[in-house]
Length: 93
Image 1 (cartoon, rainbow, N blue to C red):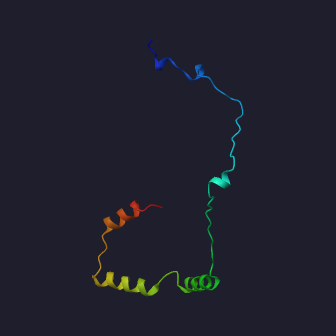
Image 2: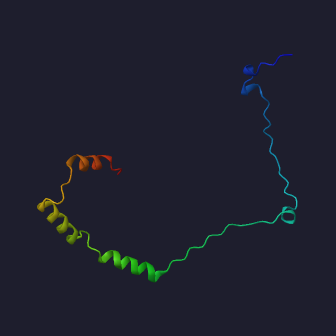
């Protein structure tokens, strides 16, 4: 007898839609139950210290801007326009 598996369809397969009851028996007696636990601790003093430091940092570090500007003016630093444009275009944002 030859069975053509390509001719079987989902409609011809029997479907059992009766509710099933699963018996757990005495699971606690046969297996040890483990639980995952996570604990978060926040060190308020540390968070406040980091926040304070971040707020004291100027948005624009003028000393860095001035040093870079001076390097460009003196000819020591020559930024490449193509590299700059490429970096801007390739930046994921």
